[in-house]
Image 1: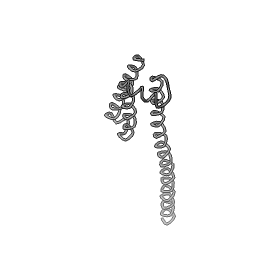
Image 2: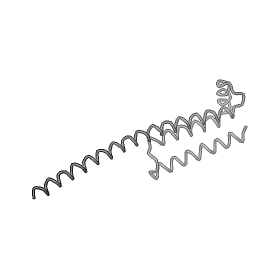
Image 3: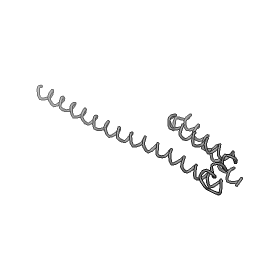
Length: 120
């Protein structure tokens, strides 16, 4: 059990460092990094507190505390990925709307150019 908990602690610390470095280098926006940092902090807290992990396993009805840890971690990361999927979907819709507006503006500019050339 200690091996898995130590691995999860290391994983959470590596994830925190990666997220902070990515924010510093502007590879990820701060508002998206909060979700990842929250999930990594939850992973760190659960992997370092065996008592909390055993209580959580009891609440979930799972006999093995490390299995409860993996279940909670999986659920946390699924929630983060779901949140990011929503953001990507909104960005895609906004991108489509922006492309349509640009196409309309280009059409109007060409129409004006054609009108001015016809008058000349």
